[in-house]
Image 1 (tube, rainbow, N blue to C red):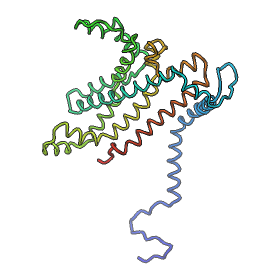
Image 2 (tube, rainbow, N blue to C red):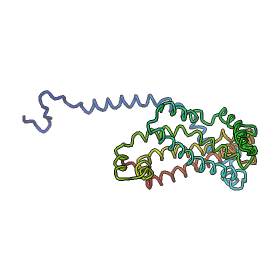
Image 3 (cartoon, rainbow, N blue to C red):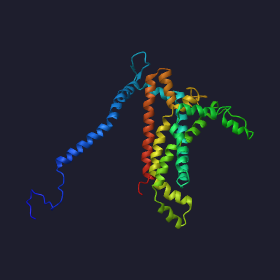
Image 4 (cartoon, one colour):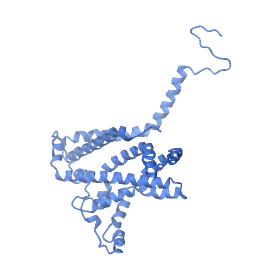
Length: 315
């Protein structure tokens, strides 16, 4: 069949491809549907974008809610480096983050590997381990935790069976933060479920081939499980890192909003709340909020930059 340069050869019985105009119309309809589903998010963003940029302006002002903001430049940020209480809150937050996050992810991965062995009643066990994460660090959970670790709580009652004297876990500066770290580790259900889903995607033939070659369980874990699960580890690490830097409820409820004893549970966000809503230093609190944003962005960027050395996306 012969055609001119301006015609297209179409085989008998074949369906002609849609015209470019029809394709653009179909794509436009799909785009409109997508924007329609995103509309609630855009509407919600309108209620946050103004406070977001207003706080950036207030960070450079002296503002106490009663008088108009007074521009003071970088004075709030300079005062932060001279504030010993703020530096203490940073130490508490960093300690909490860099201890609780690795331990929580390790516990989540360990339990996920046990559940991945195909034990009987897997859905029930999965729900039980996920339940604490679903409850999260709510007020009720923290109050329960304060009762468990109280002087007359369950932990001291258990230790008393072995002749160990009771410890005031929540009111002793040496142990108060430890109890909150244990609480964070206890809520490992969410990353555990994600780890379990990732383990189910690793082909069994890799383990079978390694077993035939005489590889030990530790060798199989190090050479197969960790590399293939590294994208999931990376995702859980980023999520946990960002969330832990924003810890507030645990310190607020455990010691009635004071961050005690001796500021041992004074998280950065809790001190920010005290400055803004107890002392009405809104300008200083805004500067603290933007500093926290920078801290989270820096550690997130470091994690992303390090990912090229240990995250494996090849399956």
